[in-house]
Length: 99
Image (cartoon, rainbow, N blue to C red):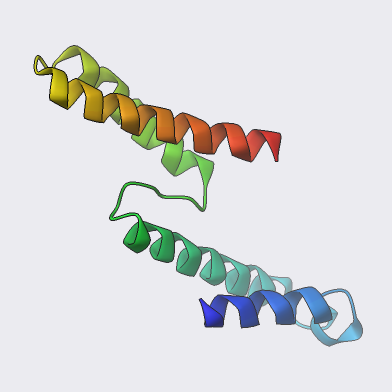
């Protein structure tokens, strides 16, 4: 997490000044993508793989794979676990759009 803070701080502070504007834009983009990957792995580890937070495409993919499973599970405990997972993903997506 400390590495991510340093990367984002350096890009944020020097991004608009002459420091990073002379560097290739691809280097800055790759650096930010690396920071996003660090954030994604941190959240994945902390949530025990329940959430992938960095990008909405992963959340929509997870949602698309979990929703059909509701029709195939007959046990109520399995359906309840899936429903919690669906609501968690919908809440994260909603927070992205409202934020």
